[in-house]
Image (tube, rainbow, N blue to C red; front, top):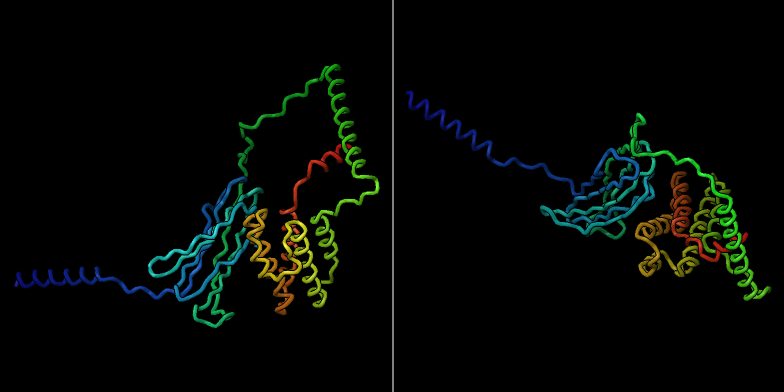
Length: 325
């Protein structure tokens, strides 16, 4: 009897071990899953954060992570990288990385990203659904101690009086530089002739004036709002044509996309912002999309930011004229 009892116990233990070792059935995964993460939730001013948006999906679905630069507030976008798709466990993983710089102390929220998807064999234009990532909270702190005990900051040195001879020499050099600058400007103007026509107005100044005029639109009137979208689209297209030489006023958005890679002066971030702006304005102009108040504000701010970010720097001749004035 004892032997039979021992054998029974051994059999029960073996059965339990076999049941525990048996693989558990995995729950079916969603066809498309999206997530967002940041490499640090607490940063200091000047730090560069990596905001990562990941989509893990079934190969039978078509997915593209949208650009979200216009929705990121409180940070400067240093770089944007769209990683190549990678296959893992029979699924496809896509990632979009934003490198962000924190300049001001405060609490910020990185927005949720809505990712739309469709089956690869679905009719063109049909959307099966969308998934959203969660918002991410980031705290930006000062690099200085809160109690003011920083030891690496030194006060300004006391002012030292300048000897009278050196003061006169400095004044003479400055006056000579001003006279030379004024003479150079006079000579250049004289060489062109007094009746020469003035140079064309810079494209960014034309754009800024047009954008400023659009601020007076009555946004409670749907007709005025649609007219606003036509005009702001025309303003940005005219600026692109005048600034970069791309015939944006006569081309469709898709034709502009084909020519954009040749515009080497545009960074990846600015190119993405322009594409997003053109596609959104096209929705209102041609697809009868009725924008919300937030969308109108983002459209205006996006156009203003694009012109500001891509305007040329001051030229040496302009600097000489300002010095002479």
